[in-house]
Amino acid sequence: MEEELYGTIGALLASTEPDEILEGLEIVSGQVPALGEAESRRLFELVYPLFYIDPLDLPGHVPVLEEAIAVVAGFGQWVIPVLIQSLEPAMSRPKWPLLQTLGRMGADAIAPLIAE
Image (cartoon, rainbow, N blue to C red; front, side, top):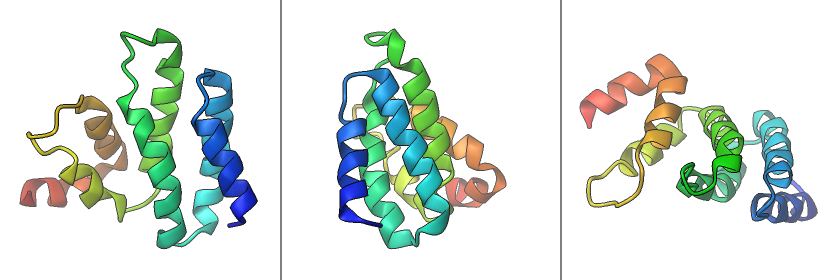
């Protein structure tokens, strides 16, 4: 993936405007199927911070959070251990976006969750 496109995605996802963030997520969603795991990880690192959005503080960002969950679920099986690790009790962040993402990934996430 071109660095310029990566920069554009980063700028859109860092915006405070939901429409711009959604535009960035749409670009990510379109790029992921053509990328390998290493490049997908770079995009995941840009998308994952959106899981920290608190829908009670920013109700206008609920569609952003829902789309971020859908996009991360599309990254593939490599993201499952990363999400499970983020569920560690020591972390003081909301767990529902992580759990929703794992749920959307379906049967592929069951065995790793049970093993953990």
